[in-house]
Amino acid sequence: MAVETDPNPAFSAFAHPERLVSTEWLAEHLGEPGLVVVESDEDVLLYETGHIEGAVKIDWHTDLNDPVLRDYLDGAGFAKLLGGKGISRDDTVVIYGDKNNWWAAYALWVFTLFGHEDVRLLDGGRAKWEAEGRAYTTEVPVREVVDYPVVERDDTAVRAFKEDVLAHLGNPLIDVRSPEEYVGDRTTAPAYPEEGTLRAGHIPSAQNVPWAKAVAEDGSFKTKDELDAIYREGAGLNDGDSVIAYCRIGERSSHTWFVLTHLLGFEGVRNYDGSWTEWGSAVRVPIVKGAEPGAVPAR
Amino acid sequence: MHAVAGGDGVSGELPAKLAEIRDDFLALSQQDRLQLLLEFSHELPELPERFADHPDLLERVEECQSPVYIFVEIDDDGIVHLHATAPREAPTTRGFASILVQGLAGLTVAEVLAVPSDYPLTIGLTEAVSPLRIRGMSGLLGRTQRQVREKTAA
Image 1 (cartoon, rainbow over the protein chains, first blue to last red):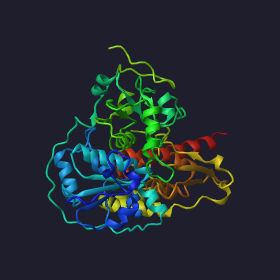
Image 2 (image 1 turned 60 degrees about the horizontal axis):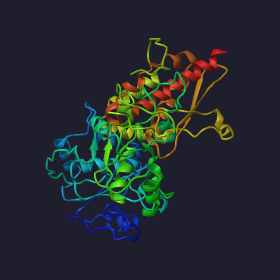
Image 3 (image 1 turned 45 degrees about the vertical axis):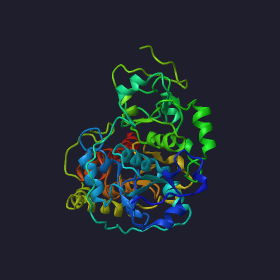
Image 4 (image 1 turned 90 degrees about the vertical axis):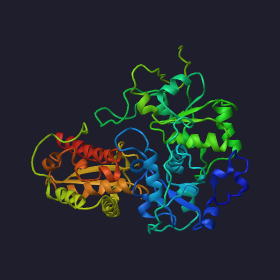
């Protein structure tokens, strides 16, 4: 059973206010039947140091990624993961985490690939919860294993592959990495171990809007007007645009995907999870260096 | 995958403390390995006072997603002292640093340089923590060994 949405007036201007809950709302609704709280962090041990009471942990790397293929888990794997965590298909899931909900948004996007209907973010994540002096526990909840149906992942609606991006050129792209990554500067000194890609720069015509621009100082999302100024006026997005967002491996761009889709109401926004670690090493894909977006290459 | 700046390929026995840490991890289940790593993260010593005025001495470990800084000192007896700092919100990184601080304690320059660069891959954490994250520990070890080389090159 879905839990009622947060009527917080701060969310009412957003396209889909039901996708956010405030810290106050969550504190009041903890333990309510049909509500499962999920913590998803960059740091795999942060949950163990203390988490919101009753929250279960889902790790982006060890839980959501396939250990062999560079891909997400499949329908059977997702069913096993969620069933094992005691999450039912019709549960309301509220996800929160560290780093301005960076990884929480990534987990939410993966839940979306499997069509889990009611999945929300805790506005402000761990940072806001902590700043307000709210409680953590180290007690890991024991939730009864449930039957979660096997639903095949839908990679067409919110996910883009390299070939999709090539076909998309000429439509808006948002590069959510840091300006240094976008421009193609190397900040890592020679002779240091270097993970990553063979080429630096960005996909031609992509606008650079670092993901954290969408976040206010307290870790919550900026207002609708502020976000419109960043993405519509700043990056030139218009209603009806087809948009693809990317970063290095698709996690920061999940955050921007959430903003564009659920807060600003753009339809059909896709996240290119291959992102720069694929594009920057792929053979003969077009790349632009420097601060300018660059022209769309001729087909 | 080997860190470029890793060991010199000198073969030999793994120092006793590093071997003990590895064996402790390998004896545990995956979930308990995380708990042990958490215990290590609690044990990372504070930086000595003298670094408070000299943040410039600290080297950022870029391979870690979280800000972690290290500084290596070599005393008159040729013993290596590794200092590391990482924020409380980054327990995994603190755990990696703590393993190396404890594992390298009391070792000589030659012994530190002889630690194989793939040590982080051998302690049974690649599954519990993920290979990508383990890379941060390889970066820590590689930079420690590089600093030792630089400081003994003169």
